[in-house]
Image 1 (cartoon, rainbow, N blue to C red):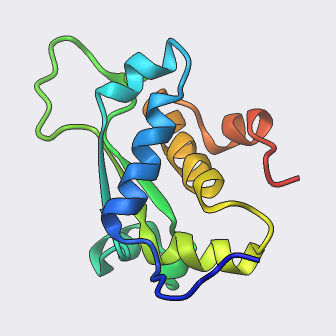
Image 2: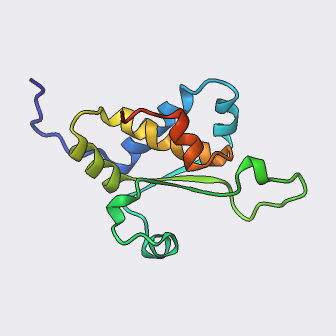
Length: 135
């Protein structure tokens, strides 16, 4: 049995470290694409983001890609901001606890890769055909 004495929930920095480990483990050509994306971790998505996405429950949003997918970029475009993957710590931890059957690093990797797939220009349907991890 694991000793949980003195342990706390993972911090924002620890969730970011798990995402960094997921990025480091990616094969090419995904590793190159992933290096160009900034990872930000926040406890929850802000109200403006949730409203824009039509989401009422902030625990429903574990991650978000904010940027222009590679399939839509032009060399002539001047980006206003870097491409970002947002990971939402409280929502990830809530899903992790609710599942109870997946390691936290596995869940963070899944969320990170899902959002990276949007950077690559994949739709949710494309991702679902490829990533069947929840089955």
